[in-house]
Length: 186
Length: 328
Image 1 (cartoon, each protein chain N blue to C red):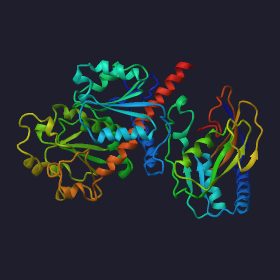
Image 2: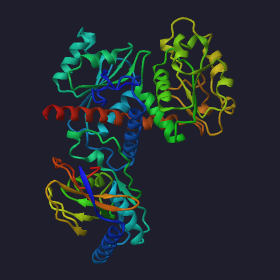
Image 3: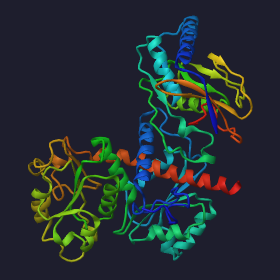
Image 4: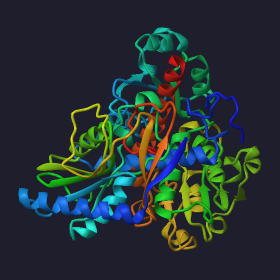
């Protein structure tokens, strides 16, 4: 596998600023106050931490590890590096902003939504992603995206970090089309 | 420690049965603890279930009585969304003359994916693992005096939750080491995870001859052995396994080895007290200690569910990978 730097930390940070701006307008438009920001491990958590600061939210941040909800457990077995999910406040009747780094097949988001609903019944869920690429295998679309990226077959894009953040593009000859949003870990 | 061919591990080192701590390395034990950490929060959610073992069947084969272990295994399986069968073997097939292997074959014909086995004979879970159909996992839930690896792992989880790192810890295991499958598994796990000192405190009559070879410091005096330890693990006095006069009396045992607040004062001021249950109050420990602020005995029970979820799901994961490998 080869990977090349596509964006450095400054460029990624300006994308995060853009996400924050779009989220701010969307929250105003929908009249959402005090949403619960939830980052999907690992890249989504880094982004959620930054957005949490930029939006000046007081509610604590949530993190999701979707290992126990993956649809490919029956094929690849247990992820040896599971982290606990943590939604620090009740999700019932709360507006949730779900953050992921790269939206590709949509399978990670399906797993994340299932997990969130096992915590309760949120008022709404907004999906915000840093990068969106073609290749959806499920009817899942983002509400906020900072960058739409056209990728060649066999290419994948990954957020690296947390210090410094960067986007890298890698190629892998026979990469399987599994839970492939954030290349390295899912 | 080799990762070569063994009954428990497949040829790439993945866990396919969980029979004993012996032969498992630190990395694998840590993986079990980390996975259990991921499951620990599930009990506090609205829906106390995750879907990963949906469609799998776990059969609890208990040839010996157990309440805590059987119920926590049952809950663990159910929280993973597996279907759980509880078979009280003593009351069913074997009393009608069916052999153990016939019982196994019948359950396999029902497409059971995993057996959780408790048996009074040492080696029973190994026997079942050797004879189970390929792709069927076996977890040892206690065999004779030999091993009780999930109990040991939930104890390790409890220690890590309360003490953080294993390095630097002094751990004392007190009581009936001779009859205790729990003690054997604990000693192996503690040494593999790298605590600085494991002590066993026991009367000579309740200490197996091979104890010294297990890498422990032996004490026959409770007050001396408990000094400055960070963790005190009390074992149950296994009255039902005692034949002959191994002890003068329970009262005498309590006087010499019972854990009281006064004795506990010699341990580290932050020391925790553990017990695998069920407690004989006034024999192994006083009620003040059992119900006191340093006791983590009830936490052990809760953690047991998360640890058993981890072991079940890791083995089911290995089965999934194997069936995928076979397809490829």
